[in-house]
Image: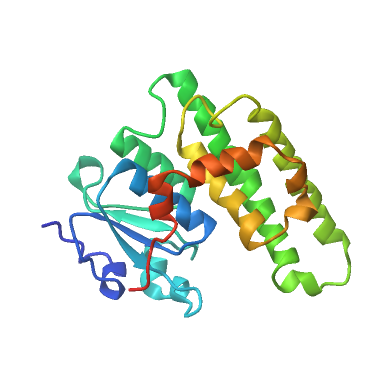
Length: 233
């Protein structure tokens, strides 16, 4: 049995299976990325709910693992060299899980970098911009009278969707094969369409390739399982 007691986070969220990857998360787009990747790879994991309602992400225990107070984060008891590996930032975690499992990233270097570039497209563009759409369309920002910031993010989300629409013409997945790039982007597509309900504002109805891509993603059994992780402890 691997001893994780040196990590303060395990005192707040005790491991049920200390030999499995410990996942600290919530079913947001960024959290879903990691639960889906874990389900796709079959790596054993132990999921713990980090509740934003009770501000778990600001607890000393969580901050000891991720000083940036954002989900998701992981603690792998069997990291490089057999030592525990703490990790935060969803893009980094996706790459780590792909390397650990030997799945979800091509082995050919050129194809691998094609997938990585689309992963960073999500990290640098889709996530931040779609998140701002959510703030101004669904949350507190919707009450701001000045329409300019809201329209700025609508327009940028529409532009990013156009980039993806063009990329997905004649393609099944955004890189040469299903990869962590799809796992990074598609939860955000689902969120802007279904949860933020901002489809009309960002031109979703004008798209053909992107909705079909999202449907393919959501039809995968591992994705369906990952969407419900973590459940309430």
